[in-house]
Amino acid sequence: MPRELRFETRAIHAGQEPDEATGATIVPIYQTVTFTQDAVGSHRGFEYSRSNNPTRAALEACLASLEGGRFGFAYASGMAAISGVMQLLSAGDHVVAADDLYGGSYRLFTQVMPRFGVRFSFVDATRPEEIDKAFEPATRVLWIESPTNPLLRLIDIAACGEIARRRGAQLVVDNTFATPFLQNPLALGAHVALHSTTKYIGGHSDVIGGAIVVEDEELAQRLQFTRNATGGVPGPWDAWLTLRGAKTLALRMREHERNAARVAEFLVGRAEIAKVHYPGLPEHPGHELARRQMRGFGGMLAIELRGGEAAARRLCESTRLFALGESLGGVESLIGYPWSMSHAAFPPAEKRRKGVNEAVVRLSVGIEHADDLCADLAQALELAARAG
Ligand SMILES: Cc1ncc(COP(=O)(O)O)c(C=O)c1O
Image 1 (cartoon, rainbow, N blue to C red):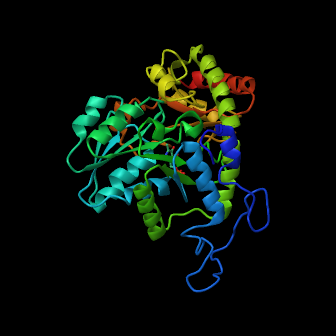
Image 2: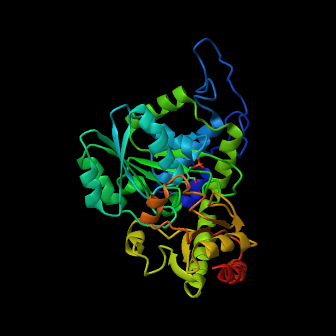
Image 3: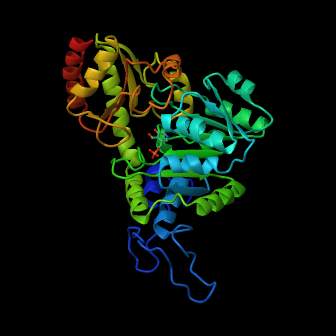
């Protein structure tokens, strides 16, 4: 698919030519384990669905195009994609990781990978000098998310790419929050763009998945080999659902962002709230960086309640449209309590040090009508104020 075609066009056509066998306009769900061979050793590009599957291949081509990379790899979940990168490392290797990470990544990095001899240093990645200091001769990977979860801090991807290159390491960017519609890490100097497609790319909270996109062929071969050897692939049905979600990513992201901006503006004016974290607000410390490296500010925001933990918990339990639940990025609005949900894996002192305290509530703003979302938050904030 020519790279000069616009994002919306690539989302609908990249990897999705009419089916060669039947002419089907929509990529079929190739629900098959194996592919009949014409002769021993002679097949039509597909042998066994762990190694390759046409529905999955369509999704991978589409995601590669959306991220502006040459090679896409779909995984069974975001964590399987993250594990896929980890499986490229060997005992003795070292990773510098941002300390502001999805709790599941932190759990993998602190409770699983060290058993295999891979070491991690966690740094405040909003400060490039801290990243540089943490590098060792054995550092192979610099791992960041931007915007971060849940406080939407911005990390300078180009600066991280420059450090990684200078130090002979690879920069991995978990681009789940931004999505390829708003940010392309490879164009900013990253080696790997990674997604939990469970979130905005799938977009309807009905399918778990992950993806990696890279430009470098040698890295692609290692990922293909390792994924085939370890097996963390999605089934064809899940790949198809994710591909269907990706088609409307641009439309949804515009609405998510429009609604998030409205909700942020509404929350800034509320007495119950001490702080609103949304990169689209001019007073957000990452606002200028977001303007430089993103094409919008996204649909996620976090708030801190003046009434502390009691108010935050009551808010989470009092909304009617915002569903209290794990995950983000679906068309429906979600509310979450990072302290005991997405960030449960972090030790309490570590959470407080990073500003993820007991008063923080995270919102994934959906694409319902913004007036209804603000009204829902208003009634819930009134109840929360009584608890706080
Ligand atoms: C930023 C980020 N990365 C990775 C993941 C893991 O993805 P999955 O739940 O699809 O395994 C999540 C899940 O919430 C996430 O928020």
